[in-house]
Image 1 (spheres, helix red, strand yellow):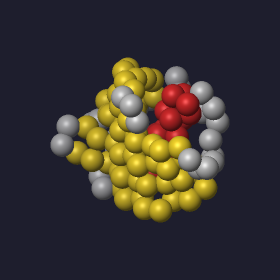
Image 2: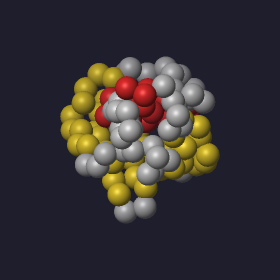
Image 3: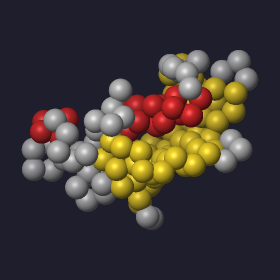
Length: 118
C-alpha cells in the first residue's frame, strides 16, 4: 500500500457514485530514485494502484483487478512538476465492481482507465 508513503490524501469527496480525491505525491519517495534519477516518473502501474487504493478506502474492503478493458496513459506524471493531482473514480457495483477512473492536474490528464474489480 502506497498511502501515507508515496502519497497523502488532501481531499476525499464522495458523491453518489463518484469519488474525487486530491492527493499529494511524495517526490522524495525511494521509488523515484530509480525511476528515473534526475527525471522522476510515476510508473503507470503505480498510478493504477493509487486509484485502486482510494476506492478501497471508500468501500472499506480489499478489491482485486479482474479485467482491464481500456487503459491510456496520456502524459508523464512527474511528482516534482505535478505534486498535487486529482483522481476521479466512478463505479457501479453488481456481481463485480465496474470502474472508470482518471487522474488530472489542471488541464493535463495523466491516465484514463476502465476496469472490473472483484
